[in-house]
Image (cartoon, rainbow, N blue to C red; front, side, top):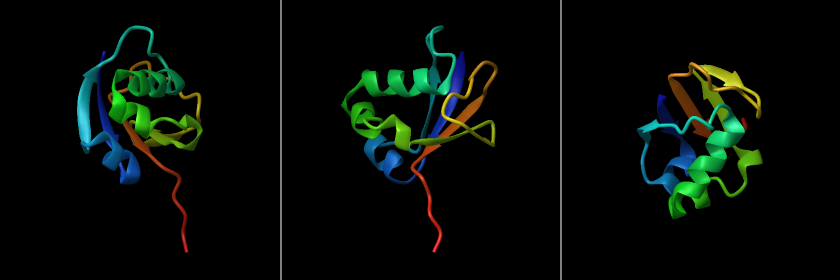
Length: 85
């Protein structure tokens, strides 16, 4: 399944790209599996997703919880928590 992944803030800095299109392995069906797969791909992913509980995600433009499914998703945005002030 082809998926566009967009990275924001320090996640983008650690990944070294703003976005990419990836072909996901069949076993990657939810957000935790995606983060684990990205972390295992290379050193950039390992640095960006060393603490997956800190990552927030929007799937197809909708904010999702930590166990969000990815079946049928076309885009995932990954970013750190944001604060106002």
